[in-house]
Amino acid sequence: MPPYIEAGLYVLVLGSVVGVEVIRRVPSLLHTPLMSLTNAIAGISLVGSLLLAGSDRGPLITTLGSVAVAASSINVVGGFLITNRMLRMFRSSNGGPRRAAGKAKADA
Image (cartoon, rainbow, N blue to C red):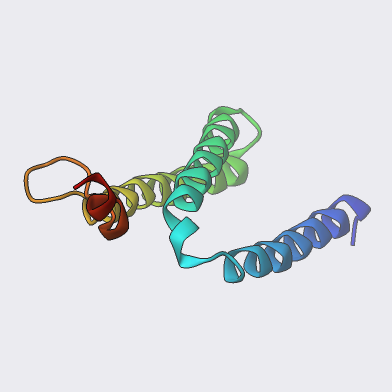
């Protein structure tokens, strides 16, 4: 196996393990900002896959780049839809931000 493939697999496995550990230990209160951050990272991978799909390096690379574009696009759109849905849960019925129960009592 060529050394660059070994290095790529090592980075993939290490990144996967670190990613799972980081996500698992995040409190539920911070999931919405974390989703926004991961959407930004997915956008970066979308740009990279667009560059790969548009490069003239052969039919296999172009096909894999196109599959990566489709997967990244689905990830970005789905992530923003989920983030938007989570943020709508924190709005009151009149469209403004919902106040915390303790803050409403202190203002009254």
